[in-house]
Length: 248
Image (cartoon, rainbow, N blue to C red; front, side, top):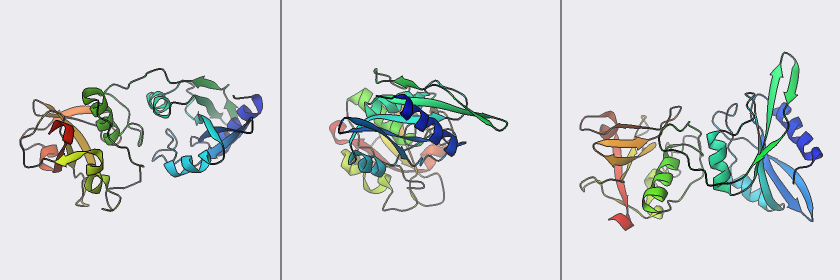
């Protein structure tokens, strides 16, 4: 699927976008493979990449999407945990090139590829990558593994919680089959929506895992368990608690 010309194009784009990661798709049309670059919408593009779903739709109209490509700028040619997770989520081959710079010279690695093979990220210790490893991703993974329930995913928008129209914790949870149970006794697996700033809206989600603890993933931190005891920060700032209708 990837010939030398496409590899050279990836390397060229990677140098042009350095120190940010470059990203895009491999498409095929009329028997010919082509390289499409997409905008990197990650909050921290020097170490992460995020392709907007709208771009995915646009690219899919140009041809059949056959793979995902991106660059690393930290000298590491090995796929990260979020890369492995993303590969599983897209169910496509992924291609990776490492771009490094020493003084005034750029150095490009050979391309490597990896394919979906059943990788599942652990609940605890995930690096934060908005859109791949974040608080809602953790809720989705937990519900799928523990209850075999698929929760809907949503496009990641920067500061989505500030505007109530884009805050899916406020106006989209029912689309996932979740019901407001804030006035009922708490149960294992309940999802809590938490306000972490002064916007007045919930900006964070977590899962209650029993024994007065939650499992969650905060920005720029590894996923972890935290106390949900009476008087704890997370309990005091909880705005809403929801439960899937299949568990009500």
